[in-house]
Amino acid sequence: MGSTRDTDEISMVLGRLARVAPGASAGDPSGAGARALLASITTEPRVPVVTRRYGPRRLVPGLAVAALLAVGIVVGPGLLGGGHGVALSYASSEIDVRREGDAYVARVKDPFADRAAYRRAFQAVGLDVDLRVVPVSPSQVGALIESGSKGGGPGTALSAGIEGPQGCTVPQRGCYLLVRLPAKARGRAWFTVGRPARPGEDYAGHNSATLPGEALAGVRVSGRTVGQVMAEVRERGLGAEFTLVVPAPDGGHSERPLKAGQAGDDWTVWEAEGVRAGTVRLLVTRERLGHNPLQ
Amino acid sequence: MDDERTVRFETVYRETYSRITAYAVRRCGSPQDAADVVAETFTVAWRRIEEVPPGHEALLWLYGVARRVLANHRRGEERRQTRNAELDAELADLYGTSPDSGVELTAIAQVFRTLSGDDRELLSLVAWEGLDREEIATTLSLSRNAVRIRLHRARRRFARALAEADVRFTAESRLVPVERSL
Image 1 (cartoon, rainbow over the protein chains, first blue to last red):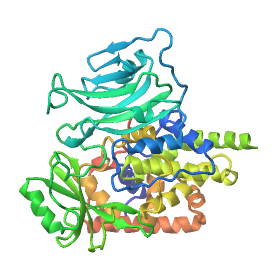
Image 2: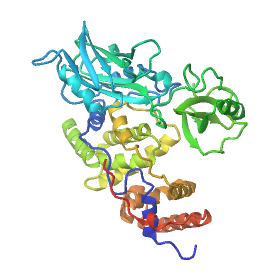
Image 3: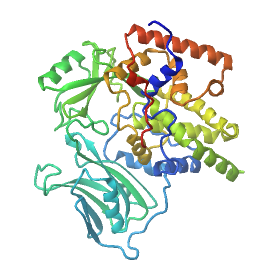
């Protein structure tokens, strides 16, 4: 190594590893998320709402709604539907929103658009709705991934799906992501809906890769060895990443990424998740446990 | 009294939120984990607002809390206090680019991960949070002298590990990164 490295040099090199540059701050305390957190902390001082960090499936569509409603996040002033000067429909190249009976129906024509464009559409019809469209694995396209509301918002009455000819692919012409919410909803709502991932784009969230339509559809992975599952993975021309599952004494668990080659062929696989097109993540333990630590 | 408490907490929150968020984002593998650490850290601060020191020391106190929260989180002991889709999404924006891309930086990152948690935290507090020895001493509840010695050893261990891994810096690695737009 020659001479001792200059200490500043070490800091500089380390600095380049930082996700947020040294000295820089991240996040705006006046942003919606930060204000929501502040409100949830100061309004519920002694009764923390405990939800499982890692459930069997973290992104079961719709499941997050209950948790959010329980927390009671307060964000900004509520806007009213049916107020003055409110349109009944709105159309842009990104999204259409229109009243159909007792519901507003939004058709996302461009799932890759900036979310401000969606927001404007909802605002035009008097709804304070923040729609996020995130990349997901094939079976989750059109699924309502996460949602929440405040002040009598649409909450659990939200639904999402795909509209178009049978088996059509978003964003083909005539094939839309569709979101339906009750017209009389008040307050604020936000929700996340899945769209197809671009090539190489990581999926948001973790979804089993063994579900119909996914990379390892129909393959049994839980309780099998890494060697056995990798044979299935290779047969399908897929790549694999590995995550170590560390069971906690109270029944939960934590997860740690493993480097390639760290997981032995005799380790046990408990779940396979889609990471991005062509790549799955195997959740493994070194020992063969008597039960699935993810459940 | 409750009002006073709330006002005090809100002031601390406003003044430290960005720094604590940066701290969590630099150390957590996912925006959800970072959001957890931020939420839990401030929840602790709210419960113990009477103990939070005034001025700049509040930030150092919070770094100390965040460090413990993070350690618990890594042991899988923390449960989500809140599920805040807004916060998750805001933090997700910070994960858009991977910091340790590039062969050389990846190698440095790998070597860094081989250090003990204590060594990594000391070096990170200097390199990432820009704390000086006195501030680190306050954050970690150590004497200044202990910080000086430990920091010296941590740097030496890191330098040795880099040399053993045959990782060399090029001129480019010496460049201080420009601040990313957030």
